[in-house]
Length: 138
Ligand code: SF4
Ligand code: SF4
Image: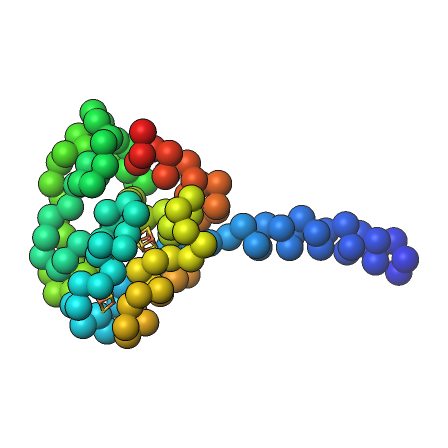
């Protein structure tokens, strides 16, 4: 019993640290009213109006090619299909959840209808997001 308790205590701290590091990507739900308030607040130019094509190099100085999260390598200026045609959307490959810029996601902070929400299907560590920030802001 005593040994089990010690083991549990030893496990608790790393687990607590790991959980604190976990962050979830932000997505815009279909409750978006297309007010546009979030777009200028994004430090990574990761937010686009519905129906607008996106590119890695929009709003930054990245040059050459860029490896997307799914392993695809694209020219940074390549125009990609909109994630949504109906409401504002966030490009996951460009979003750092504002890590490295702000204490909290700015899109969520300004959204009047609270439709910028964490995506439980996309959990990314703070270190991973900082690495993405570095890649997007050479
Ligand atoms: S969380 Fe930050 S980086 Fe991501 S889309 Fe919102 S404002 Fe942009
Ligand atoms: S601030 Fe909210 S409601 Fe307005 S465009 Fe952005 S996600 Fe949509």
